[in-house]
Structure formats: C-alpha cells, structure tokens
Image (cartoon, rainbow, N blue to C red):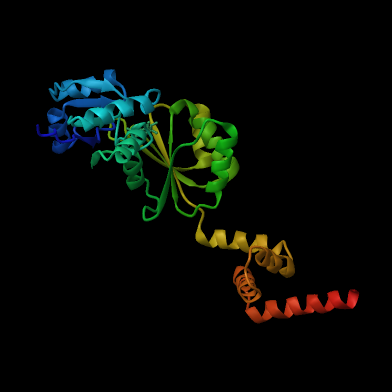
Length: 292
Ligand code: SAM
C-alpha cells in the first residue's frame, strides 16, 4: 500500500483591525486546509463567518502550545494540512506560533508562511522615524528585573526600537522607558488599520504628560528613536576617559590580545594616534621602574 504524503503547516496572517487586510491566498488556504489551529477560536470564528469559511478549528494557545504542537505535528505527519492563525497579524510574531514552527522543523514537517498584516511593520512604516535599521522587542517582560535588564540593553541601541504594549500597562512602560533611555522622540500608534487609527508623533516625556490627563485606550505600538551614533561614540569615549591608558591597555591584554593589537585598540577607542598611546605606556613603565 502506498504511504500517504505528509501534510504541511501554513502560517496565515490575519487582519490587525481592518477585515479587508487579508490576502486571497490566506482565504483560499483557510478554505482548503483540513484544520485551522487558532489562538482563540471564539475570536477567529468571527473572521471565518465573515468570509464564509467552514473549516473545522482547534485551539492552539500559550497554555497548551507545547503539548498541542506535538499533536498537530502528528496530524500533519499523517497527511493533514493545517493552517495556523492567531488573534491578529502574523503568526509567530509575539504569539505562540513560534513553538509549533520549531516542532515542525524538528519533525521534518514542511512549513510555509503566507505574509500579511503585522502591527510592528505597519507601525514602523507610519512612525516617521528611521526605518532602515530597527529592532523589535515585542512586549517588555512583566518581571521588573528582567524588564530593567532589557531596557538597559536598549539604552545604547542605535536602531529604531519597536515595542508592543497593552493600554493598561502603557503609562508604567513609558515611565520606565524615560528613566532608562532618557527623553527621546517617539511615535505612539494606536488602533492601526481601524476607524480610530492614531499616529501620535511625540517624545516620551510628552506622551507621559498626555496620559496623566487621559486614560490610554486601544492596542498600541511604541516606536522609539535609537541613540544617535555620534552620541554613542561620545559616551564610549567618555567612559574610556574614566580609566587610565594603562588600565585600558591591560584590560585588553587580559582578554588575550597581544601587545600590538591592544595598543591599536586603545588608540582607536580613545580616538588618538598609536604613537601617543605608546609614549604614555612607555612613560608609565619608566615611572614604575624608578619607584621600585
Ligand atoms: N502577531 C501580531 C502581529 O503580527 O502584529 C502581534 C500579536 S501581539 C499578541 C498583540 C500586540 O500587537 C498588541 O498588544 C499591540 O501592541 C499590537 N497590535 C496588534 N494589533 C494592533 C493594532 N491594530 N494597532 C496597534 N497595535 C496593535
């Protein structure tokens, strides 16, 4: 008997607000697959009803993602085609899709992604901030220490920063961003693709002031400008100036660099010539030998 061919997983991007933001390919796939795995079946049924799609659904969410992924992978290995949809946007971007994709790859089950709406990209394109280089942090963690660590990492980030946030945590997050990143330009984008879409070009401080007098409403994305390269260089230079040339040089030797490379690096870090560093180190050595 001929063995049945394996099925595959289709990651299907769904609208982030406006129902017209769905592709023909996604609609056809949702109609043709054997099963739709949905983050919240009660939410996705509205989308399926709107487009008269009758394919059966099963739930796949944060709390069953590991076990349920195993079950879904087995079904695909037995020949079924499965589509994954989440509450909004592109599956696996800040939602449980990532785990299912990982397990499919591990099991040798084919995965394909049907592109469409994604809040992060939509927000970035509308932000008016540099779009060429960006980093996406999704939601900052709720654990205070972890959140602080990530913000510290973002402090020197020169790329545009994209964050997701829920309205009830927005004020706190803005305050924490201000404390660590300092005041910066930012764009706050709410209710993207919906009737009341708003694009608020502001600064972190002004956004805080705004939400002191009104309650944040609606889903939002924060796009924050990165630190300028010039400012980063100046900050680095300042931190090197806090240590002596000798300490700086010895730090590199401890990291395993040879003397020539360490001297070259110190000169580069401090934005001075190699000869100058050589003279300072030589003088320090001479002073040391006089003292001993
Ligand atoms: N997978 C989704 C995507 O591709 O964008 C993201 C899912 S994540 C669980 C939900 C977050 O995305 C929200 O809290 C909000 O930060 C952002 N988001 C989703 N839809 C949005 C919209 N219409 N306007 C603004 N932000 C939105």
